[in-house]
Amino acid sequence: MRKREIRAGEEGTVICSLSEIPWVPHPEVSGLERGTLVTAAVGRPAWFLTRIPAGATVPLHATATTDYVIVIAGSVELLFEDGSASMLSVGHFVVQHGRSHGWHNPGSEAAVLSVVMSPTRT
Image 1: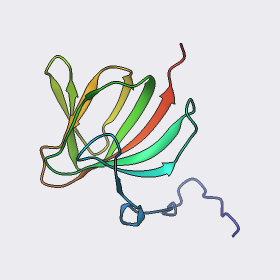
Image 2 (image 1 turned 180 degrees about the vertical axis):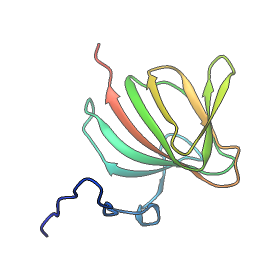
Image 3 (image 1 turned 45 degrees about the horizontal axis):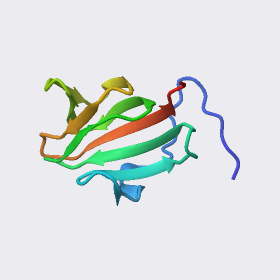
Image 4 (image 1 turned 120 degrees about the vertical axis):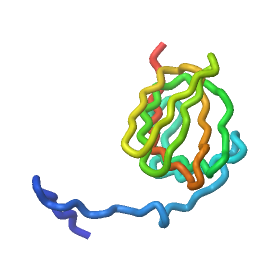
C-alpha cells in the first residue's frame, strides 16, 4: 500500500477508531483497560490508549517516567497525594514527572486517555 502525503489544509485520514482497538484489562490496576498501540522495550518510550470506565478509580501510583497525557474522550479527575484533584476533559493535556497521582472517572461514560511514557533519566 502506497502512503499518500497529506498537505496543509487537507482533511486527514483516520488510521483507526476507538471502536476498532482491542481493549484488555490492565494487568496491574483493577477497573482500568488498556489498548496498546505502540509497545516498547523496558527503558524505551511507549504510546498507548487507556480507557477508564465510568465510576472507576485508579489508585495513587508513581512511575520512573515522564508521562504526556491527553484526554480524547469523556472526562476524568487527576488525583494528587495531598488529596486535591483537577477535573480534565477532552483536549486537556497533562505532563507528569514521576509525581504520585491517580485517576477517577466520576462521569457516566468512559474516559479515554492517550498516553506517552518516556523513561526519566537518572
